[in-house]
Image (cartoon, rainbow, N blue to C red; front, side, top):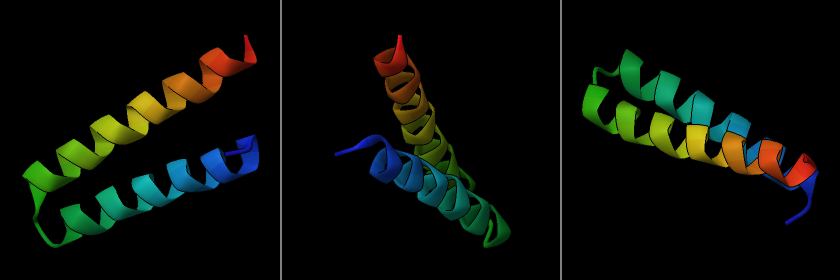
Length: 48
């Protein structure tokens, strides 16, 4: 995956977590947030 695709995936995960919170699926939202955080770290560390 290129950086643009990874950035789009990261944003999709953030949006999904927000939607899950709206529906009160807080546990699922926490899991999606964790994946989004790990993806952000991977994207940022790739730039270093």
